[in-house]
Amino acid sequence: MSVADNLRQVLADLPEGVQLVAVSKFHPDEAILEAYGAGQRIFGESKVQEMCLKHEALPKDIRWHFIGHLQTNKVKYIAPYVALIHGIDSFRLLAEVDKQGAKAGRTIDVLLQIHIAREETKFGFTPDECRQLLAGDAWKSLSHVRIRGLMGMASNTDDAARVSREFEGLHALFVELRDAFFAGDATFSELSMGMSHDYPLAVRAGSTLVRVGTKIFGERDYGRQG
Ligand SMILES: *Cc1c(COP(=O)(O)O)cnc(C)c1O
Image (cartoon, protein in one colour):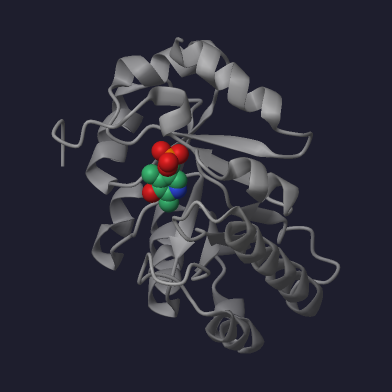
């Protein structure tokens, strides 16, 4: 199966209103161009340098989503062009994105990452930390960053019931925060959850953005870069 065939298969699984982030990290420009040729415009990367090189080399109408762990000292490199940053996990990082957005003369869309898996990652806010952040006023004065929703990763397990519970929990938090802090404001609209092995469960639980790599591009060759 070609990249284009795989892409069409994933897209066929997605209902109206769910967007696909084609996760192209560690895959070469040619693979991205194949998906681009099949109509895909949103690509996800997890390393700053890799995303910047691809952004320079590839068509300018690609919307680059940063999905990895972002260090504050690297925000400046992606601020001029990034379409959405999925993994905001501290107020400090949010404030830095605001600062670099102002320098670049744009408002940058971001998602707050929530830690929902039991042990897989150390990144992300707990639900309570996220409630506290949004209940405070500090983020409201940041005029060059816009909080568009939440992102999370479920536990890496074959236990589908547990994965579904985690996704449903994140969806419930999304609805709670939207109603509590963004009522009447349509910008808090995105829920990024679901990867190659679990996106059907994520979609059922209310995902609006799935991040799918392996199922489109095949296994990653980590020896290639980084
Ligand atoms: C790599 C990555 C993905 C894609 O994973 P696949 O299993 O290849 O679909 C999705 N989300 C994040 C945060 C990632 O780092």
